[in-house]
Image 1 (cartoon, rainbow, N blue to C red):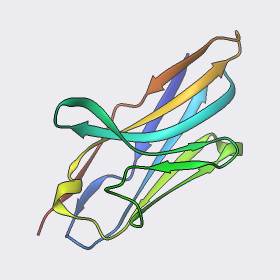
Image 2 (image 1 turned 120 degrees about the vertical axis):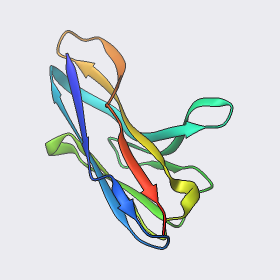
Image 3 (image 1 turned 45 degrees about the vertical axis):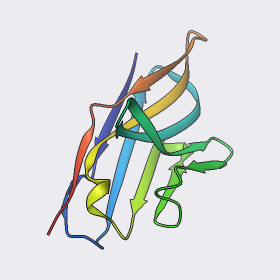
Image 4 (image 1 turned 90 degrees about the vertical axis):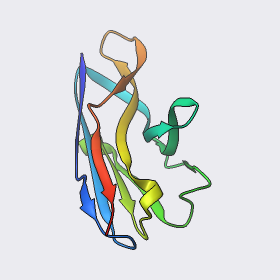
Length: 120
């Protein structure tokens, strides 16, 4: 099995910054992609940002220019640097990883979520 452990959430004022981390561990052979999601109206979760093993990134339009996703492949860890935070960024942020496990199965895994609250 694979476990994802998130950290870095909290309360911040509008315009402030936070950095989220998500570390994957367990029966990992390789990780295809890692990303961050949050709930959205009419959707279960929407993509915030994602990054492949090769470093290709994808961002939601609402966070482009403010959020930066990065990844440490050696540590199986993904980071989300969030700057210029707005109240509408308030949400539980979930880490996702698409993992090939040591038994050659490929599936997505989710973290438990970390709360980000942007408020004055």
